[in-house]
Length: 176
Image (cartoon, rainbow, N blue to C red; front, side):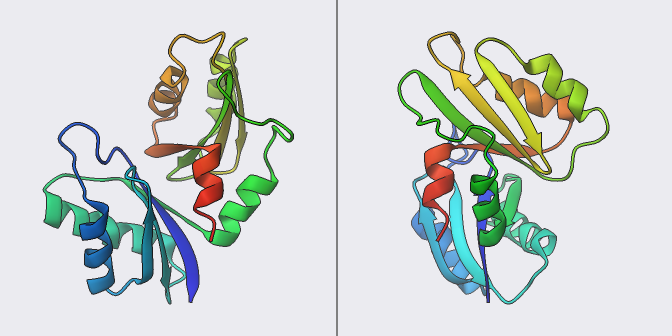
C-alpha cells in the first residue's frame, strides 16, 4: 500500500464547509485505507493500493462534489514525493516565525514554458519564489509585506493551473 496526502483546495472557507470527521468516514467507505486528517484546512492522509495519483484525485473530487455540492480541486502527492519536497527546500536553515514564513504551493501539473517568467515577475524584496517541478516554494518576509498571501493568488492566476498552498509546518506534519 502506498501512502499519500491529498491537499483539498479552499475547504472550510466561507460556505465551503467540509467536516473532517465526515470526510474521513466517507473516504473510508469509498475504499481508502488508514484515513486521517490534519487540521481543518483539507489535509488528508491515506493509503491506497493504486499508484495512479490522478485517478485517486478524480475519485476524491467526485466524492466531494456528490456529497457537498461544490467542486474541490484535490492535489495528491505520495509521502516519498513530500519527503523530497522538504529535502529540496531552497531555503535551508530558515526557521519560520512572526516575521518570515515559508509556503509550498502544490501545482496540479508541471507548469508550462512561461513559468520561469511568471516566477521572475513575482519576485520582490518581501517575496522570494523558487519553482521545482510541480512545487513552488515561497519565502515571505512578513515585516515587508502587507498582504503576505497575495503573491500566491497572483501565482495561481498567472500560471493558469489549479494549485493549493500550505505552510512549511503543515507540510512537515502531514508526512507520516
